[in-house]
Structure formats: C-alpha cells, structure tokens
Image (tube, helix red, strand yellow):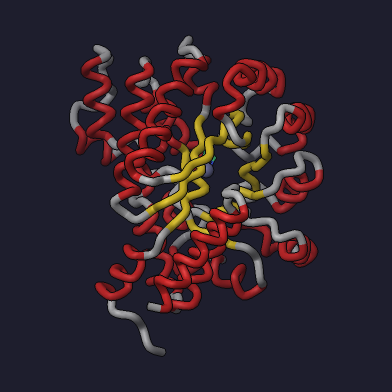
Length: 341
Ligand code: HPA
Ligand code: ZN
C-alpha cells in the first residue's frame, strides 16, 4: 500500500488547524522551566540536571508517572509560576497551529500544599486570556478532581471554585484510576452540574470497561478521556456511536504508560472504523515525548493513516469541543479548506 513520505506527512500535519481537548497543564511542565522556577523559588529539585530529569521519565504504568508528575508540580508556588507554565504551553502549541484548547488543571495538587485556589486559577486564566488576545487561541478551562482523594475533598474543591466559576467551563476526573471508580464521585458530579459545569472523566485508560459505563450512567459525562478499553464491549461501542460521545485519545501517553505495548497496537483506527468520535491529544506532553503534532505524526505513521482519516480526526476534535456551533462550523470549514486546497 502507498505510504506517505515522512517529511510530507509531517508537513501536512503541521498545517492542520487543530484542537487540543485533553491536556493537563501540569503535564506540560518542561524540565527547563521547572529548574528556572525552582531556582527563583529557592526550591531544590531531586535531580541535578535537566538531563537527569528527562532520564527519570521512564514509566511502567500510570502510577509511576503520577508520582513524578506530582513531585514536579511542587515547585509551582506563585501566580506568576502558573502563568509562566500556561504561557509556555500556549506558545508551544501556537507554533504547532493549535487554534483551540480545553485545558485541565488539578487544583488539589496545589491547594493540598497550601497554595490558594485563587493563586492557581489566576495565573492560568491570565495566560489563557493573553493567548486569546495575542495568539488567537480560543479556550475552555476544566478543573479536574483527583480520584485517589475522597469525594469529600472533591466537594471542598468544588466549593473553592464557585467564586471563579465564570472562568471555569467544566470538571473532570483524573489521577490513579484502578480502585477509584467513577461511582465514588457520583454526588460531586451531580453538584458540579448544578453549578453549570460541563462534565468529563478519565475512564478506561487502565481501568475496565465498567468504569466507562459508570462515567456515562452515573457521572453523566459528555466526553470520555482516553476510553481505550471501550472496544471490549460492543454494546458500549454502540452507545458511544449513537450518542456521539467523543473519546479524547492520547497515543504517545498510551505508549509511555504501557497502556499499549507499541503504537501499532493503538485502537484508534478500529474506533474510527466503527464510527466512534475519536480524537487525538497529548495528555502530558512534557513527560510523554510530544505535543499535538508529534501525537498525530507517530499515530499516522504507525497506523498508516490516510489524508482522509487525518482530516476526520481534526474535524472530530472540533466536533467534540465546547466551541459554540458557529465557531465550530467555522473551524471545521477551515480544516476542510486546508485538505481540499
Ligand atoms: N491519567 C490520569 N490522570 C492523569 C493523567 C492521565 O493520563 N495525566 C495527568 N493526570
Ligand atoms: Zn489525562
């Protein structure tokens, strides 16, 4: 079968107007910036060089990654730190032609260390606003509850968020999946919806297909983050298709955390073939070896994706986004124009 030349494929991917819907801002913390912020905050890191940090980024599962990811976030203290972190991410994805982002942040990772909710969200919000004005990047902000903590702790976070709810579009559920099913958070998701927040949850990354059902039926989410395991259950596949429930897939993350053994095993193509609204994102790009373009490229190469499939993936991401219908249609036409020119 005809395969696209690597350089040609890269060029196509670079030019696609893209939407990123599954990105943990703390997971975009590059070691260079981590050292800079640690130095100015007089915090010493466990590692003595940037290379040593990068060398430590080898994981056998989600938990091994999370331990390092939470440790890295400890150097973030002041509003400026959260601003710099967010601005660095937005500048980077701007260079990759990402035009819309829906960004997760983990308030509890910071409030549990005594950092005020307001400090965290103000830094992130100001960088997002600047990117909207100066880089023409539209955005939504999603506050994620840590599922290894209690539902009571999630309720405290919900309460802390209320004064800032005009800045927050949705809530999510992340961190250690196994042993922390969505059912643990049913009440706080109901209460979050009552505050006007949209709902998403990580499910079926390492956890079983049952967790995806729970996210849909108990938490009432509008999108599933990851959802890799859905192909284990034909009735679930049917549900995802009929109700147009998007999956936000993160292929480089899946390889890095050994959710799959190699990229060639990624279920993305099977999902597209079944009509699932599958989309591609970077999850924690500083830790998993790539931002949006690298995720598209490695997936396209391993699965031998066609131009039509790349176009479908780019359209799916805008379709799955929380942009208003007019902006959505506008972005989708831009993708079509790009591929048809
Ligand atoms: N899964 C769960 N929690 C996370 C992830 C992830 O991939 N990244 C950051 N927090
Ligand atoms: Zn994630």
